[in-house]
Amino acid sequence: MKVLIQLNRLVAFHKTMGDPTRVRIVILLAKGPLHGQAIAGKLGLSAPTITHHLKKLRDVHVVYERRDKNIIYFYLNESMIKQQAQELTKLLETRGEELDEMMEISLERQKVIQNFFTKEGKLKNIPAQRKKKLMVFEHMVQGLSMGKKYGEKEINEYIKQFHDDYATIRREFIINHYMYRENGIYELNPEEMWAKPE
Amino acid sequence: MKVLIQLNRLVAFHKTMGDPTRVRIVILLAKGPLHGQAIAGKLGLSAPTITHHLKKLRDVHVVYERRDKNIIYFYLNESMIKQQAQELTKLLETRGEELDEMMEISLERQKVIQNFFTKEGKLKNIPAQRKKKLMVFEHMVQGLSMGKKYGEKEINEYIKQFHDDYATIRREFIINHYMYRENGIYELNPEEMWAKPE
DNA sequence: TATCTAATTAGATATATATCAAATAACTAA
DNA sequence: TTAGTTATTTGATATATATCTAATTAGATA
Image: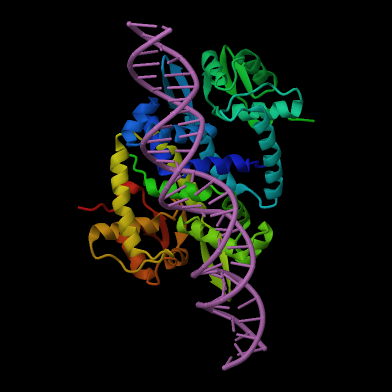
């Protein structure tokens, strides 16, 4: 099977992790979720600065947030970090000829993602065109971890991060073989099984 | 065993990998060593630009170079990439309390490294003070891969990247249990075995 | 020694970004 | 509705950095 890396995603991830403040935030969140003020306090930085960094971390899906009353808690998305660690080693298996192809695919995909997601990472609507729809789903599924089992509630919560209509999207995940379900437990399929355009 | 991460090293690595040109260089070198002009040609960038990026990649030990006649070939240090991929996942196991400790150690170490290595990464001289000496050796040993077997020639070549007196340094590696030797084959020891100060 | 090629350095420019204080927005609870 | 808390946005500033051209250095060879 061909090693396909999404260059932009990989670069964006590393760029984001290439800042000491952000890594410190990640380390703090590894212990458990925190709200903005707490992070600011622990790191001795202002609230706007923390907002700034959290936005970047959220852009690459390293953190996500959940509101409880008036306080927004930030969570670490561990699976994304694990995934990117894998991508890094995949780089070594890449044959140089694939570079151009990778760049092209990356570019097209980037455009679609940019069109259908707000800058906050919310899905505006589900694309009608199949190819684009699949790109959007693949994008969403990136934050899930291979081999991990998810309860239905958990999946719903995860999808809500992108769109309120989690039921439809969850169904699409199954239909297009991104995930499979057994006794109410959801799990990511291997990439070979995912729906492909054409 | 405690998870000890060198924050600065980790951040520097990711910062370096957070640039599309540099990742493209890494992908090219994954196929095999190349010289500067070749890289410049393939990427459509000027020679100075390539020099600039190679310097950064060299700073974090992702590439190293070897001269053949008049041409300098750049090699990918795959073990460093694998190692950093591991460090990334180690982040997740880090307990937040270790943050300060990590920062402090990082800072002290950084200073020592800065004092004893030139900005080209060459070791100026072996520190007399034991603690600093160990830091220097640990620094050098970072580019070797755990579990990999190295021939004596290979080790010598590797050490020459830092200092001409490879024999002394190779001996120190053994004395301080960074590596062990069996029938002329060298291998990295697990970190628990490494010499510790005090 | 003179000359060729490869690599680096210097200097310039344009762009990005980390940070803060002040203003604003979003939400809760009284 | 009003007050209080938390988060974000705005605007300013200082710093970093990706890229180029031109000049320089390093090493090989004729």
